[in-house]
Length: 509
Image (cartoon, rainbow, N blue to C red; front, side, top):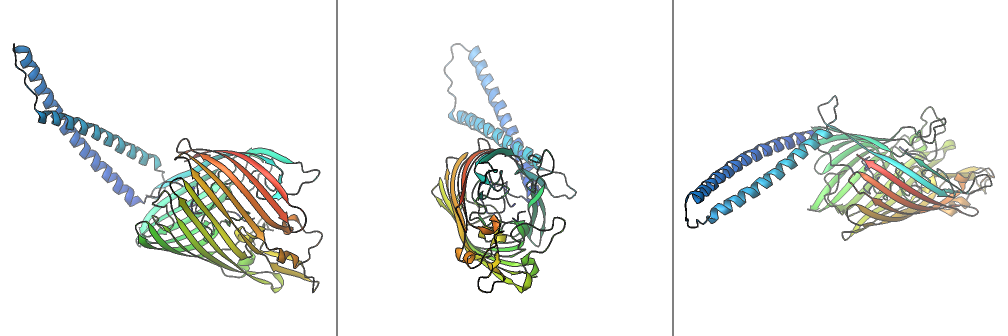
């Protein structure tokens, strides 16, 4: 299975597949302007505070004189205090309180800016981000990967009936850099690493994950145009369900969520329709990975798509809530979007066999009032294993029942997922989602498979149901219990099921 931003963040709360939910990127020029504005505001506040102190001192002197007159004169008639003096005192006290609050706020902003500075060889700012994530789990049934299961496997006499454990392998470490303006574009870059690149050999294998580049990108952002070169998810699949139990690979991977991170070059153009809505066009060139695992552990061998000597082509048109830039955050806390996408790739196989893979996808994210949201994706295509669909198979290899010779056949697939989200205030949310990935049975039945065919080769359908709570008692603390049920069916015989109970705890910075 192929696996490698800008996110955040998914893990993370749902967002477009650039990882991502971190603070908005601020270019260096804007930071300097911000500091100048803060400095000017502090000077102005100090001047106003000094003026208020002089006025208070004057009022105290007048009050002292009045007390002296009262003490030295007997009897004395009442000297009413003028209303304008009372109003002046009240106004001054209110102004002092307001100035103190403003000064405290500005000082906190300056301290926050100093905390976000990271020294680098360039003069431009760099920010450290990350998610230290602990995952514990109990699996009832046999699964392919105990700390991040995607499929249920058939049991045997020596396989047991479940497992339990814990892991920090889904922890994410990231860097964000902000550069100069080039041709009017704001430049930035980011890279995210995790520890899901494999397991180290030795007695500590369960806790010593191998570092892996997860996502990376270089971005050029104008007001209504963006160019991105990145190791990111498919342009045709911008969303993922919310989960902190499945971060190393997005939730519902292998069950209707096309997700594979791969090198891409993207261009996006926005057409503002009014203050809160926009139409967006996106085009992309994708380095199509192969489904399955590399047969060479030392050197990179070309995938069938790379053998064709041309990239895969992606496009997407969407309508929805306006964003800060093509790959930025939404202005709205409850963003709306719908999209339609297309994909094409040419794959070359031995003996002159070629396959034209394609996909048509749709995505949606619809808020239902202030507390509810429905989102999801759907697809139909051919040879989608490299994208994370087609039960991770681009083609089927077997014997042609007519000719008796070996034959390749592209696997048609249909699938998708949907999620219902409920917000209980800002610190608690509940999510329920379901996804399915279904390879066409007619493609399987058109070939005869040898008796040595593996369970992976015969796998035809995968389905998953997920329910979780995400609780953030503080801004950077995360607690999330989750339940998953997996159904996996081969083309012949009975299916398998597995139940997964997990508890995740994270610290995001």
